[in-house]
Amino acid sequence: MVARLSRIMQVMQKLILTTLLVCAAHAGAQSFLYLGPVGTYSDQVAQDVARAHGWTPTLASSITDVSNQVGAGKAPYGLIPIENSTGGYVAETLTLLAKLPAWRVIGISDLPIDNMLLVNPGTRAGDITTIVSHPQPFLQSANYLKANFPNVKRVEAKSTAAAAEQVAQDGGKTMAAIAAPAAAGVYKLGVLAARIQDDKANTTRFLVVQKNELDSAASADRAVVSYLPTRADGGLGLGQLLTGLRKLGFNVTGVASTPSGRLAQERLTLFLSGRATPVSVLQGAVRQTIGQATLLGAYTAEPLKTAAQTTSALAQACPDLGTNAAGAELLAQLTACRLDVAYEVAQAKYVSGAPVEDLAREAVVIDGGVKALPGVDDSVVKAYWAAQIEASKAAQRTLIDQWTKAGTPKFAHAPDLVTDVRPKLDALTTAISAALGEVWATRHCPDASLPAGSSQARSALNDYSKIYGAAIAPVTQVCQR
Image (tube, rainbow, N blue to C red; front, side, top):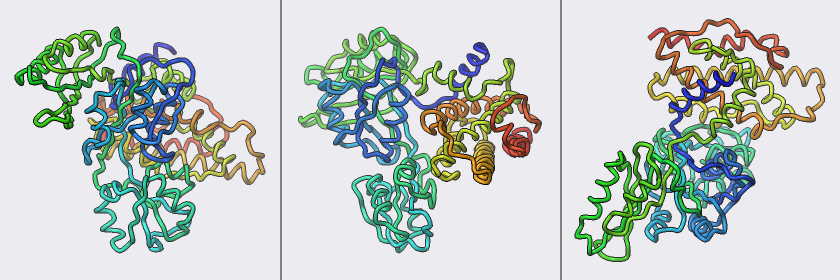
């Protein structure tokens, strides 16, 4: 079992593209400051990072407030937005970088921006007279709005969450909000349209920062360096810095320039990528540079969850996983296990009354599946994940209908969708991506027969085999290319 999970984890590590934290998780719940409010994109990132490391997400009044509190040691960790792929660098953050902050960067988190058109249940597109949002989503979704709501009034709000809250409280059935996927659940809104942004690759990058100095004994393959030329360096310092870092295998992947307060003297923040190098070696190369150079960050491209956390979640979600399962067989077993988890999802929704369909979450799952497998045809990946979602919904609806007709009491200990179910689904998603990539490469497709194993879902659903068959069917596209 351990060897099998270890092999799966090795494959998964290669496919995870999100660049995040290098530091070890600290004991106890420690404050993790971020600019909200709840239901925004930054809230979505903060909740994920905090949950993975046992930190307590804590709201701050501004980006500068996060910087000041972490820099002063009043909070150990913080989340600071740095850049949007279409909007460029965040001005407030650049101002902080220009002053050489006291905190250090220990990781980054990239979040795809998926703008959702949210409404109160029962609202139809033709009824909408007003759309509310932060100014940025209006720009990001300009073409969609022009094509679908050319004559609808637009009202700006201080945040996407505030827009969603306004619709929930005062919108009736004539108002809509453009907001983050998380806002739908927070404010009990329905998704009228998903992923309406014009640039589907639109992404925002966040810095994860800490007060403590970087661990010089650790290794890192990503770095953030602040450089301010001086009159004494004669313009040679930057070249010397870059030469020293190139010798270590590091190259610049991004540059932000901010005024230093003096004419013709800009502070540069350099983002670099390279091979694993001791942080102490990076620090030495930076210190030897003419001019004012500071290593602001060092981290590695690792997944959000530790290997131990992901392995444990996968074992819980798929306890009957075959020891030697690989390729098509592995994908078939993982697909069945994901369908098994639908039983827990149905329990939670039966108790809470939450709807089976969650278009916002579905769009995120499909988009994430595509991004995790850049070497696989998009249509194959989309078809596979769409089939998983439909299979899960079919199982959930059947189970909830059975319990309702039988008068089954609400489950006293129903699983929590966030703390109990999501880790299992996340672990399965990563493992499935690895297996689907292997099937794509080998063209060895699973058959439609149900893998061995037992679960509450399999025993409760008479149509389980039929639902599973629909879930695995799209994989046959892999062998038809």
